[in-house]
Length: 287
Image (tube, rainbow, N blue to C red):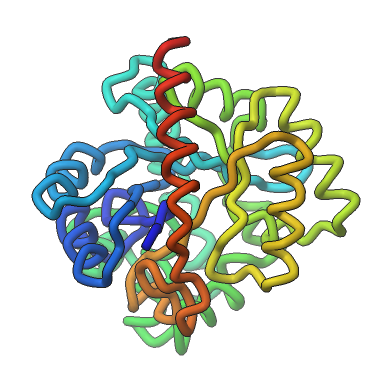
């Protein structure tokens, strides 16, 4: 079973890299990737845990970019010690720290009297992105669930206008991944909410600037969407990948490692990992 889209406490997941990989193994996952947002700080620990469990492991990252709409680009096979990647991650860590202050001010203005100390209590001493603030809002009674916190506070037009941090272009995100020896894959295309023709046109543009794959199998994709994404992969000679987008039961309780939502994932197509391994090997030779 394959799961190439997993988050840990190094970004906005609930469990440490080691815990997450062990849980994936126990769930029956045999090929996994940790893809934390804008960081590779959990890769070494996750890789060691995967080796101990006898799993196939892909070092990964998920980069948020802005190209008319916010896109997420997954990078597989990236070298954690890449200077280009470290510079990129350092810049976005600084941006995230600045956004924490803006987010606190925004939430306090909206009547949610929370502090950084409150957020750290909900995130093992660290602060990071919106899921951690959402958990804090739930903990302190300002929202009934993480989803409610997002809808009420963290995905409104006012939030994006006041708080959202600057993001690189798709070209820049893809370039960072490929410069670090990785393979660039468009994450969860359904989230873009584009009609098929518009998504087709977008994928064609991204292919020109270095996109190498598309996440066809995903927890929230319908069978019809998956088939269309597989069609795009064939049309544009792209890899197709599979990921749950697991964060943990507190953050995304409906999504399970390897199996997705109500076991709608459970992908065992060995061609996915074989083609990805070949693409990573080719990328390493180029870099």
